Amino acid sequence: MRPFQGRAMTIMRRFVLPVTLLAALAGGCVSQNAQKAYEADVIVYGGTSAGVVAAVQAVKMGKSVILVSPDTHLGGLSAGGLGYTDSGRTDSIGGLSREFYQRVYAAYSDPAAWPWQKEEEFLKVGGQGTKARNEADKAQWTFEPRIAERVFDSWVKEHNITVLRDTWLDRAKGGVTKANGRITRIATLDGSTFKGKMFIDATYEGDLMAAAGVTYTVGRESSAMYGEEHNGVQIEKTIHHQFKAAVSAYKVPGDPASGVLPNVSAAPPGKTGEADRRVQAYCFRLCMTKHPPNRIPFAKPDGYDPLNYELFVREMVQSERKDFFNKFDKIPNLKTDTNNHGAFSFDYLGANYDYPEATYARRREIIKAHEDYQKGFLYFASTDPRVPAYIRDELATWGLAKDEFADNGGWPHQIYVREARRMIGPHVMTENDLHGAREVPLPVGMGSYQLDSHNVQRYITPEGNARNEGDIQIGAKKGPYRISYNSLTPKKAECENLLVPVCVSSSHMAYGSIRMEPVFMLLAQSATTAAVLAIDDGCAVQDLDYAKLAARLKADGQRF
Image 1: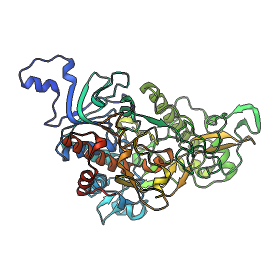
Image 2: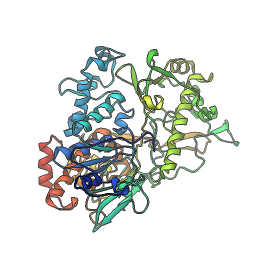
Image 3: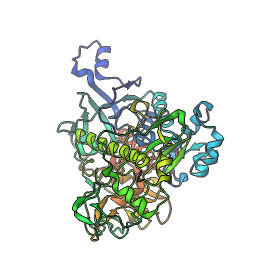
Image 4: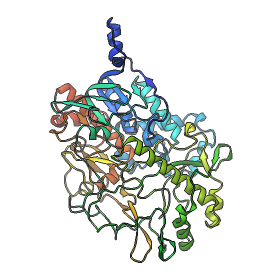
């Protein structure tokens, strides 16, 4: 999310009209303030992939909808750099989520979509094997950001959906109005108001959920809280993306008096299994290329300080690692979806702890700090003479893709918010649900990706060395697992007409698997289906007849 970037743009759905326009058509006289009052059956807040799917589903079920997006660009991370889809088992993905990837496939069926590379050349070298472009079900799981955004934009245009972009929820008191346990309207910072029968929070941060007074949590629960093995602080079990050599955490190696290096915490890491408020690290998923006509060289950012990357060069020299380029995952047209890899990489550990509940201004600062960190890292790794030559020389041939994020200098619009707030609803999805240790009630979708938490902190060992903590990667023991409808709704006493398909009711460890873009989209479809049926039945979302919901979901191709 890039707060306040760009200008608002409205795509008007023909039968959802501002209250002022309705009044004008009736011959009424309205004030300037009234011109910003909107009303629809369903109000979706959040321009993520889930937000788009939620809006599309509402229209397909015959309801009026408004998509209120704080972002200028639709699609969230799916259009923001994560083109190497964390799909898990693709046969567990159904409904509109699968349709998105089929629309991507159709977009790449146009020869004009391949300006830098022949399609057959990509299929020979593209990652994910046959999943990259699957002929059997006409779906493509590996794609460029610009193609994904084009699909999302065409989707809302096709359904004549009202989209208000660069429109931010007023998170202060009064931004969400409730009566008799229901949201009646929400207000945005530009003075607009949105009245609806049902509301969907499709943001990565859970801002509408929080402003509505719904209970949530941030950080890691203790392992004892839900009887999980891998939740809370994990000192001994953090073995992935770990330092492979003893690397001193001090500016002068071995000398605590010299001071602690940047990007290392001097605070104790905590005890194994205990809860904390830390969240797993964020980064930007960069779209890079080494194709000269489309390449923007890495530039030296303002405020660049090579000391910020001292740990990296020490570890790469001392460990003699050769895996720096392992997560330059190939996507079409000679580009990459570049992700964090190794002990010191694109994840900015410890820099995001206050992001989930921060003000918009503070979030902008955090996002900018992550951008500066990653830009500095790329410049350092491609120019500093101490960096091993195999990294420095090869990386110097890479750059940002010129035809991606063109209005932002090739830099993604969306930071990877791997977790922020998580709702505490009637059912909290836990590690045990994902492993099949208990029956999941009222399933409305499936997940299948491994339980994946990136590192959470970098601390100093008793020996004075840097060590990472928090990266846990374990597979669900019984394959694809069900996700409960009761993890998409708040407790009834808190709100009766809100559904939350992104910041779902989940423990930190379970969310490490649920937090994948295909899952967000399929849960958004299920949540919106429930919202529409609840409107028709005149009931709270918590009281909806599950048999009726399940029947409609199955009819729409959902898999659970």
